[in-house]
Length: 630
Image 1: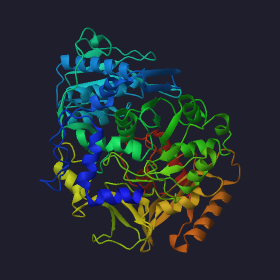
Image 2: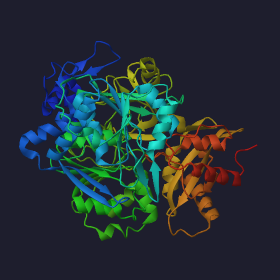
Image 3: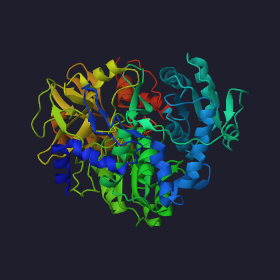
Image 4: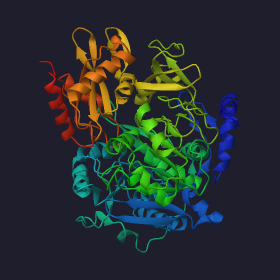
């Protein structure tokens, strides 16, 4: 079937479409129907089924005779470690950990916080929770103590599973003091902790409260997979909220299984047994959906990579991993590619490796500017697919679905709606806008299986954050437009559409122009307050390695370029060169924080910031061009 036929089949009978997809999942009790809409606009999928995520991700592959297949590859350039774990090994490791948790009183419905770096044990902890029906909440390893404390108070976990430390290039991050500090700060006190001791740092354990990962598993009965209701929460994943109180996105067990399994073949074009690599972190939604659950449920080999795109040891580390493990489909953030391109603009490192195994590269997490896509296509010689989704959605909503049909690529667009998603571009009053016109990106309800059915203990906030502004639609918080061929363009967060003298302009469109300059490796555009025009765009440029020209000249050239490509209406005159941009650990540029600095406003230090020192560098660069205006 073509993409159009598949999409039409879903749209004409969503019930049949998802019940058909559900046949690929192993059920203890199959669902009687797909959609449960009695409490609309709160929807549930496969709610009356009985199923277990861990059984689908691990045990069923062993029972089908594929126990010897590698399930998890661990590759850690920061510690010099490599390891392969088969499905059979994974089954015994996960069953043992689940049994030990149960022996300490963790049962179905109890919450467990997981505070781990990129090690296979992080996946084992997630799977062990799902095996016994505990609801896990993974918190990015190394998160500040107060941020971890907020999550402890919201999730009220029975236990916390953590590692002794994380390893960053050139430093060890001490997790145990952060964990102890968070428990001290939190009102809720977990019953106990489990600590995975790493060779790089062995943490001191409190007797009777902190239990050693290996020691507490000794002599316990391994746990079997517990049948769970289809609408049982699989996990809580906190995403930053505008109020400073993070939002606990929940995922229901059955919908997640059906949707993720469907995407592995239809979107990522993988067969069971193929190697899939998502270069992300377990603390992010990508780590949940496409390092842990999606690949394993579908019977793929997944890679847990503890390193960086550059510097561990060089800009060729991604290509080494792809060659060494025969990666068929690779998924990472555009930020990673911009870092590699900046370090290796002519692709000298790419030439050192045989990448003939690779079928496609997928990008998501930040807007993929056309320049980065063209560079990646030229270097790799495979389709480079920008696709778009959110923590809340859990899996791609816009994608070139190469497993169904490879569509023409349009630079700057994450392609077309995936079956399950019907998009509408609306104006402020909730009316659809014509093709090509900028508006709020919304998705018609109900959202498909695997998306968020609600927020953890915060239904009112769920409704007000996502559903109330445009009744009958889910509000994505992004702005963009649909072209005449049905391709959708994400131009900015709604907050990043700036108003220059009454003209609504997309910062994303300006970033595309800046990125097309041959000396610019990475860039960001923000809107700063202006007394005359309301807002003015300001550009931040990171130059390519080896770009030794006068920065002032480059600024003049990009200003001219924006004037040529977008027009004088953009009023783009302000730009400055910086060494690096402030980002979250998942690679998102902290534009909102940059706006606050430029406007001289107070701001809260973002919990997810990669390196707080960068904000001082941004402040100095802004002061050099007269911002904030006193």
